[in-house]
Amino acid sequence: MNAEEDSRSGKQRQVIHQTTMMLPYFDDEVPALCLADDTAYLPVRALWRMLGLRPETHIPRWRKLVLWASARKLPLQTARGQRIVWCLHRGALPFWCACFNWSLVAPARREQLRQATEAWQEDVAQAQRLLLERYRSPRRYLFAFLEAYSDAETWLDQWVLHLSPSLDIASSRQIELVLSQGKTLISEATTQARKMVQEQAIAPIMDIVTIDAGGEVAEIGSLPLFPVVPREDREQFFASLRKLAQWHLDMAAFIDKLKSSQNRGQSEEV
Image (cartoon, rainbow, N blue to C red; front, side):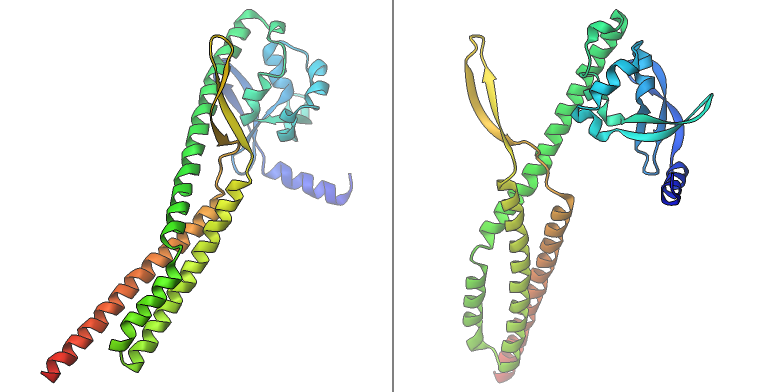
């Protein structure tokens, strides 16, 4: 190990906290390695020993699966000292349960695997429903916004033409400046909204089908495969909407001020 690798290893050891974790449904306590962000990893060998299986038989095949993409080598403190071992992300447990033949484990463990898998499937379904709502809600806002402001520049220009004859030079310049600010804000929000809609349009789509008792398949709709609107995009879009809402308030206040000024002028003339 060179100096750079040794330095990285030292930093890694400093941010890892070793503890134990009781696995739900299995009633077994296994070691857990927690990173600085509280992400938990479970040693692969401990999981296999829990099921009474030999890790040497299964680990080589596992490393070819997508499941292994989240695996990491981490230092585990054992009775014989520290060892660098393969660990799985805690969130990969549902996939781990599907990576081996359940007939290889004792009947009691098979029942635990069944209970755990059913519960995790419901968790996945609930997470999917939440993702869909988080996807659909911003999508509704995007289309509503684009429709409401599709002709914004035209009606703002018409508004200036309507107001200009009743304004003096100073007021005309002020309202042109205010409307220019509004156009800029609308343009920024529109650009962001279109970008998000376009990204959603090219996202992978899956068809949803039903199969009746006779084996007939009927398509009932489609959904995005990964119904996620990036948090950064959502935050940027709604930040633009807040700026635009404030501009509408400022614009209304400005118009009220102009009306008050004109009313005072008319009263003085009378």
